[in-house]
Image (cartoon, rainbow, N blue to C red; front, side, top):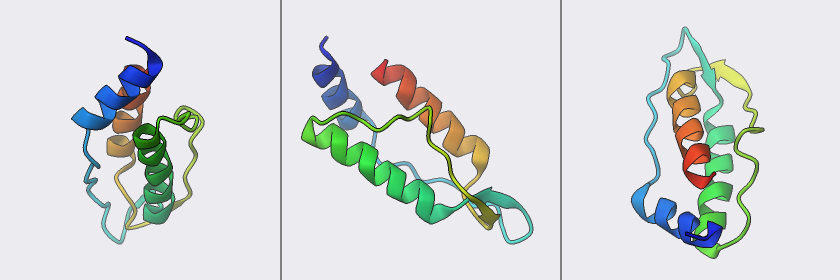
Length: 83
């Protein structure tokens, strides 16, 4: 399967994930940072354009952000599927 074919396959199978938030007292990834990055990724997949560097994604920390382990696991799986 070509990279473009894999991209379409991944985008068709994976919807936009819903991550849990940490609550006020714990640090997590800044929600807006993660959402903006995933917008770029899914827009690229839908448009057949190169996907941003998933392994190089960096997010700021903040209280009440997304659970780090959930975001990291999703990005690891997505990167592996895109090869």
